Amino acid sequence: MTSEARVAEQVIRKRRVVLKMSGEALASSASDETIDGGVVEHFAREITVARAELDLELAIVVGGGNIWRGTTGEAQGLDRTTSDTMGMLATVINALALQDAIEHHGQPTRVLSAISMAEVAEPYIRRRAIRHLEKGRVVIFAAGMGNPYFTTDTSAALRAAEIEAEILLKGTHSGVDGVYSADPKLDSSARRYDELAFMDVVNQDLRVMDLTAITFCKDNRLPVLVFDLMGPGNLHRALAGEEIGTLIR
Ligand code: UDP
Image (cartoon, helix red, strand yellow):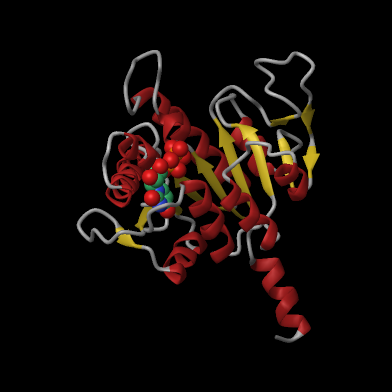
Protein backbone atom coordinates (compact mmCIF):
# COMPACT_ATOMS: atom_id res chain seq x y z
CA MET A 1 0.00 0.00 0.00
CA THR A 2 1.35 3.47 -0.86
CA SER A 3 1.74 5.98 1.96
CA GLU A 4 -1.06 8.10 0.40
CA ALA A 5 -3.38 5.11 0.34
CA ARG A 6 -2.48 4.35 3.95
CA VAL A 7 -3.24 7.91 5.01
CA ALA A 8 -6.55 7.80 3.10
CA GLU A 9 -7.47 4.54 4.83
CA GLN A 10 -6.69 6.03 8.23
CA VAL A 11 -8.88 9.03 7.49
CA ILE A 12 -11.80 6.95 6.24
CA ARG A 13 -11.67 4.12 8.76
CA LYS A 14 -13.86 4.65 11.79
CA ARG A 15 -13.02 3.39 15.24
CA ARG A 16 -14.02 -0.24 15.58
CA VAL A 17 -14.83 -1.63 19.01
CA VAL A 18 -16.05 -4.93 20.43
CA LEU A 19 -18.22 -4.91 23.55
CA LYS A 20 -18.47 -8.08 25.61
CA MET A 21 -21.47 -8.31 27.89
CA SER A 22 -22.39 -11.25 30.04
CA GLY A 23 -25.73 -12.92 29.68
CA GLU A 24 -26.35 -12.21 33.34
CA ALA A 25 -26.32 -8.50 32.58
CA LEU A 26 -29.64 -9.05 30.78
CA ALA A 27 -31.25 -10.77 33.75
CA SER A 28 -32.82 -9.05 36.67
CA SER A 29 -32.82 -10.09 40.29
CA ALA A 30 -35.67 -7.64 40.87
CA SER A 31 -38.05 -9.29 38.41
CA ASP A 32 -36.48 -12.77 38.61
CA GLU A 33 -36.56 -12.90 34.82
CA THR A 34 -33.94 -14.69 32.72
CA ILE A 35 -34.14 -11.82 30.27
CA ASP A 36 -35.58 -8.63 31.68
CA GLY A 37 -37.29 -6.49 29.05
CA GLY A 38 -36.52 -3.28 30.93
CA VAL A 39 -32.83 -4.09 31.21
CA VAL A 40 -32.57 -5.05 27.54
CA GLU A 41 -34.36 -1.85 26.60
CA HIS A 42 -31.91 0.17 28.73
CA PHE A 43 -28.92 -1.39 26.93
CA ALA A 44 -30.54 -0.99 23.52
CA ARG A 45 -31.03 2.73 24.12
CA GLU A 46 -27.49 3.25 25.43
CA ILE A 47 -25.98 1.25 22.56
CA THR A 48 -27.99 3.05 19.89
CA VAL A 49 -27.33 6.55 21.23
CA ALA A 50 -23.64 5.99 21.88
CA ARG A 51 -23.02 4.41 18.48
CA ALA A 52 -24.77 7.23 16.66
CA GLU A 53 -23.21 10.08 18.66
CA LEU A 54 -19.70 8.68 18.47
CA ASP A 55 -20.08 7.43 14.90
CA LEU A 56 -18.05 4.29 15.44
CA GLU A 57 -18.31 0.68 14.38
CA LEU A 58 -19.69 -1.48 17.14
CA ALA A 59 -19.79 -5.24 17.48
CA ILE A 60 -21.18 -7.01 20.53
CA VAL A 61 -20.50 -10.44 21.95
CA VAL A 62 -23.14 -11.54 24.40
CA GLY A 63 -22.75 -14.45 26.82
CA GLY A 64 -25.35 -16.98 27.86
CA GLY A 65 -24.77 -17.37 31.59
CA ASN A 66 -28.25 -16.12 32.50
CA ILE A 67 -29.65 -19.20 30.76
CA TRP A 68 -27.00 -21.91 30.75
CA ARG A 69 -23.31 -22.50 31.29
CA GLY A 70 -21.43 -25.57 30.17
CA THR A 71 -20.13 -26.22 33.66
CA THR A 72 -23.70 -26.21 35.07
CA GLY A 73 -24.66 -29.22 33.00
CA GLU A 74 -21.37 -30.96 33.56
CA ALA A 75 -21.92 -30.74 37.32
CA GLN A 76 -25.25 -32.49 36.75
CA GLY A 77 -23.66 -35.32 34.81
CA LEU A 78 -24.25 -34.01 31.29
CA ASP A 79 -21.64 -34.58 28.66
CA ARG A 80 -19.47 -31.42 28.65
CA THR A 81 -19.61 -30.93 24.90
CA THR A 82 -23.39 -31.18 24.87
CA SER A 83 -23.63 -28.84 27.81
CA ASP A 84 -21.34 -26.30 26.15
CA THR A 85 -23.43 -26.48 22.99
CA MET A 86 -26.47 -25.66 25.13
CA GLY A 87 -24.55 -22.67 26.48
CA MET A 88 -23.73 -21.47 22.99
CA LEU A 89 -27.39 -21.76 21.99
CA ALA A 90 -28.26 -19.69 25.06
CA THR A 91 -26.14 -16.86 23.67
CA VAL A 92 -28.24 -16.92 20.50
CA ILE A 93 -31.40 -16.34 22.55
CA ASN A 94 -29.77 -13.34 24.22
CA ALA A 95 -28.48 -12.04 20.89
CA LEU A 96 -31.97 -12.13 19.38
CA ALA A 97 -33.41 -10.27 22.38
CA LEU A 98 -30.75 -7.58 22.02
CA GLN A 99 -31.19 -7.33 18.27
CA ASP A 100 -34.93 -6.87 18.61
CA ALA A 101 -34.56 -4.14 21.23
CA ILE A 102 -31.80 -2.28 19.36
CA GLU A 103 -33.77 -2.33 16.11
CA HIS A 104 -36.78 -0.88 17.94
CA HIS A 105 -34.56 2.17 18.35
CA GLY A 106 -34.01 2.30 14.60
CA GLN A 107 -30.46 0.96 14.65
CA PRO A 108 -29.96 -1.78 12.00
CA THR A 109 -28.43 -4.87 13.58
CA ARG A 110 -27.21 -8.25 12.36
CA VAL A 111 -26.79 -11.40 14.40
CA LEU A 112 -23.95 -13.57 13.12
CA SER A 113 -23.90 -17.03 14.59
CA ALA A 114 -20.91 -19.35 14.86
CA ILE A 115 -23.34 -22.31 14.74
CA SER A 116 -25.32 -22.35 11.54
CA MET A 117 -29.00 -21.72 11.91
CA ALA A 118 -29.94 -20.04 8.68
CA GLU A 119 -33.55 -19.38 9.69
CA VAL A 120 -32.65 -17.16 12.62
CA ALA A 121 -29.21 -15.67 12.05
CA GLU A 122 -26.56 -15.19 9.41
CA PRO A 123 -23.55 -17.47 9.58
CA TYR A 124 -20.39 -15.90 10.96
CA ILE A 125 -18.26 -14.85 8.02
CA ARG A 126 -15.49 -12.42 8.91
CA ARG A 127 -15.68 -10.36 5.75
CA ARG A 128 -19.44 -10.08 6.04
CA ALA A 129 -19.13 -8.91 9.64
CA ILE A 130 -16.74 -6.17 8.57
CA ARG A 131 -19.02 -5.14 5.70
CA HIS A 132 -21.98 -4.84 8.09
CA LEU A 133 -19.90 -2.67 10.41
CA GLU A 134 -18.78 -0.45 7.56
CA LYS A 135 -22.42 0.04 6.64
CA GLY A 136 -23.19 1.27 10.14
CA ARG A 137 -24.93 -1.87 11.40
CA VAL A 138 -24.38 -3.13 14.90
CA VAL A 139 -23.11 -6.70 14.66
CA ILE A 140 -23.93 -9.18 17.40
CA PHE A 141 -21.74 -12.26 17.43
CA ALA A 142 -23.71 -15.23 18.75
CA ALA A 143 -22.94 -18.86 19.65
CA GLY A 144 -19.49 -18.00 20.97
CA MET A 145 -16.93 -19.37 18.58
CA GLY A 146 -18.87 -22.55 17.91
CA ASN A 147 -16.47 -24.76 19.86
CA PRO A 148 -17.05 -26.33 23.27
CA TYR A 149 -14.65 -25.79 26.21
CA PHE A 150 -14.45 -22.05 25.58
CA THR A 151 -16.21 -19.03 27.01
CA THR A 152 -17.69 -15.99 25.37
CA ASP A 153 -14.83 -13.90 26.83
CA THR A 154 -12.45 -15.84 24.63
CA SER A 155 -14.89 -15.60 21.72
CA ALA A 156 -15.02 -11.83 22.16
CA ALA A 157 -11.22 -11.62 22.14
CA LEU A 158 -11.02 -13.79 19.03
CA ARG A 159 -13.68 -11.84 17.14
CA ALA A 160 -12.08 -8.53 18.14
CA ALA A 161 -8.74 -9.69 16.75
CA GLU A 162 -10.34 -11.07 13.60
CA ILE A 163 -12.15 -7.86 12.73
CA GLU A 164 -9.16 -5.75 13.82
CA ALA A 165 -10.99 -3.91 16.56
CA GLU A 166 -8.87 -1.40 18.44
CA ILE A 167 -10.12 -2.46 21.87
CA LEU A 168 -12.23 -5.02 23.68
CA LEU A 169 -14.63 -3.48 26.18
CA LYS A 170 -15.46 -5.92 28.94
CA GLY A 171 -18.57 -4.64 30.65
CA THR A 172 -19.17 -5.96 34.15
CA HIS A 173 -22.55 -6.26 35.79
CA SER A 174 -21.65 -7.11 39.38
CA GLY A 175 -21.30 -3.52 40.56
CA VAL A 176 -17.49 -3.63 40.42
CA ASP A 177 -16.22 -0.82 38.24
CA GLY A 178 -12.83 -2.18 37.20
CA VAL A 179 -10.00 -4.38 38.41
CA TYR A 180 -9.10 -4.16 42.10
CA SER A 181 -6.10 -5.28 44.14
CA ALA A 182 -8.51 -7.42 46.20
CA ASP A 183 -12.25 -8.07 46.24
CA PRO A 184 -13.67 -4.61 47.09
CA LYS A 185 -16.79 -6.21 48.54
CA LEU A 186 -14.70 -8.10 51.11
CA ASP A 187 -11.70 -5.85 51.61
CA SER A 188 -12.21 -2.11 52.21
CA SER A 189 -8.52 -1.40 51.52
CA ALA A 190 -8.81 -2.80 47.98
CA ARG A 191 -7.89 -0.21 45.37
CA ARG A 192 -8.91 0.04 41.76
CA TYR A 193 -6.21 0.05 39.12
CA ASP A 194 -6.54 2.66 36.38
CA GLU A 195 -4.18 0.69 34.21
CA LEU A 196 -2.58 -2.73 34.32
CA ALA A 197 -0.19 -4.78 32.21
CA PHE A 198 -1.39 -8.15 30.95
CA MET A 199 1.38 -9.87 32.88
CA ASP A 200 0.13 -8.33 36.14
CA VAL A 201 -3.29 -9.80 35.52
CA VAL A 202 -1.78 -13.22 34.84
CA ASN A 203 0.83 -13.18 37.64
CA GLN A 204 -1.55 -11.84 40.28
CA ASP A 205 -4.33 -14.13 39.09
CA LEU A 206 -6.74 -11.19 38.87
CA ARG A 207 -10.09 -12.57 37.79
CA VAL A 208 -10.86 -10.20 34.95
CA MET A 209 -11.62 -12.72 32.24
CA ASP A 210 -10.63 -16.34 31.95
CA LEU A 211 -6.95 -17.00 31.43
CA THR A 212 -7.39 -18.19 27.84
CA ALA A 213 -9.02 -14.88 26.92
CA ILE A 214 -6.42 -12.75 28.72
CA THR A 215 -3.44 -14.55 27.24
CA PHE A 216 -5.02 -14.31 23.80
CA CYS A 217 -5.38 -10.53 24.20
CA LYS A 218 -1.80 -10.28 25.46
CA ASP A 219 -0.38 -12.32 22.58
CA ASN A 220 -2.34 -10.29 20.05
CA ARG A 221 -1.80 -6.88 21.69
CA LEU A 222 -5.51 -6.29 22.06
CA PRO A 223 -6.20 -3.78 24.86
CA VAL A 224 -9.05 -4.60 27.23
CA LEU A 225 -11.08 -2.04 29.16
CA VAL A 226 -12.92 -3.43 32.18
CA PHE A 227 -15.75 -1.14 33.27
CA ASP A 228 -19.12 -1.14 34.99
CA LEU A 229 -21.61 -1.60 32.19
CA MET A 230 -24.62 -0.95 34.39
CA GLY A 231 -23.91 2.66 35.39
CA PRO A 232 -25.91 5.22 33.40
CA GLY A 233 -23.76 6.74 30.64
CA ASN A 234 -20.84 4.37 31.32
CA LEU A 235 -21.07 2.65 27.95
CA HIS A 236 -20.90 6.02 26.22
CA ARG A 237 -17.86 7.00 28.29
CA ALA A 238 -16.11 3.70 27.59
CA LEU A 239 -16.82 3.89 23.86
CA ALA A 240 -15.67 7.51 23.77
CA GLY A 241 -12.31 6.52 25.25
CA GLU A 242 -12.83 8.53 28.43
CA GLU A 243 -11.07 7.49 31.60
CA ILE A 244 -13.24 4.86 33.18
CA GLY A 245 -12.63 1.44 34.69
CA THR A 246 -9.30 -0.33 34.25
CA LEU A 247 -7.36 -0.43 31.03
CA ILE A 248 -5.27 -3.55 30.50
CA ARG A 249 -2.61 -3.47 27.79
N1 UDP B 1 -19.54 -21.60 25.16
C1 UDP B 1 -18.79 -22.51 24.46
N2 UDP B 1 -17.94 -22.06 23.48
C2 UDP B 1 -17.81 -20.76 23.18
C3 UDP B 1 -18.56 -19.82 23.93
C4 UDP B 1 -19.42 -20.26 24.91
O1 UDP B 1 -18.87 -23.71 24.70
O2 UDP B 1 -17.04 -20.41 22.28
C5 UDP B 1 -20.53 -22.09 26.14
C6 UDP B 1 -19.93 -22.41 27.51
O3 UDP B 1 -20.58 -23.55 27.98
C7 UDP B 1 -20.35 -21.19 28.33
C8 UDP B 1 -21.70 -20.85 27.74
O4 UDP B 1 -21.54 -21.10 26.34
O5 UDP B 1 -20.45 -21.51 29.70
C9 UDP B 1 -22.19 -19.45 27.96
O6 UDP B 1 -21.15 -18.53 27.76
P1 UDP B 1 -20.44 -17.74 28.96
O7 UDP B 1 -20.35 -18.61 30.17
O8 UDP B 1 -19.17 -17.19 28.45
O9 UDP B 1 -21.50 -16.59 29.20
P2 UDP B 1 -21.45 -15.34 30.19
O10 UDP B 1 -20.83 -15.78 31.48
O11 UDP B 1 -20.61 -14.30 29.54
O12 UDP B 1 -22.87 -14.91 30.31
